[in-house]
Image: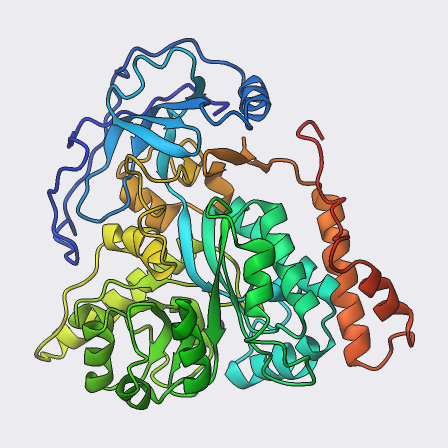
Length: 525
Ligand SMILES: [Zn+2]
């Protein structure tokens, strides 16, 4: 937003918003040339302000439910694979998208203007499955297979988490998501050791301002308060009584547990589960009990039978695949089940799983998926196999990372695409950086060239969270200190080196009601 020398404009092809020119699930654009030439902007551009002044306006009016924001002259990627990008404006009123198109907002004279020329405007990414509590454990074991991850994260460090550590982990993960353009994620929180741990995790999501789905689950190892799933009723009353909050509640289940699935069904709660060989693998039994329904989100889905895939599809279960996690951890086929899902008519979401071994980066997740899937298609074609699936397209990858994530989160009517009436969860990607210029094909630029450093601005429900390349209202020095201290304390406790009594007492004092809020800064810092 600080640069305005070269100006992108969509000319070939110019699409009308909502027009469908390419069927989903096909990569017929492979080999074709997408040229996006420069041309004067439409829609009556007005003089542009300094980015810092625009931010001042955005923050000054953030509590005004009628506030208008006009994103001008963007190359807009709507999200669904069958909708072509277009050049135009997006008008936001309050938290929602009000108009989209070449002349959208032409009459909104009082709007805060965001110069989106030189940028791609797209829906925020939605991660279908992330374990946010592990945020401060980031990068501790780049070569871990699944057993290594279980030993380090769950059997060891998880058992030493205090509520304060749950807050810090969720905070670190929420902030890296916002920085990387991930505006929504399902927090598969399988280290819910007490009611205070759960509250701390939710407090962090709410404080960070990310759109989240808090999926609480029992820990895998060690002593815990056995408060879950019954603590669900307290959480619901304490945090989730308002429909307007950014964070919603569901359950997570790591193991095959018909009783807890029944508990969720009785309360109308969605359930996220790790599914496949090594995790929930009794789908047939659960199906016979009537517990496999459209309010389920299945992560991974490695090594399922054709019969199980049919049950999943026929019952409307949402599915997400984890290109990097599935290939790194070595469970079952160890290959993302994208073709298996597409074969039964399911368009999957994407998920990053955890940060023990790799980063929060949906750009990489899309790239890895595209290359893996195409490599397998080519391998099978070149060896003259029959029944080879079609290669997925870059546009498919964006849909998986946005709209299908929203479907996994049960939020398809609220987020995941740039459509009138949806929440304004929006991301601006700079197309003047060395790795993104000249932005010839916006879809290709996002999927295979951009990275989180190119995310200039992020909005969640119309509220600015990142601006001009920096998180808004966050003192990263404090966040770093919190992460380092929590990580070191966990390691000390795991080694039996913690000072008896001192650390737990201090951290108990910081639990519910007094979370560490001093990581927030004024926008000017
Ligand atoms: Zn997982």
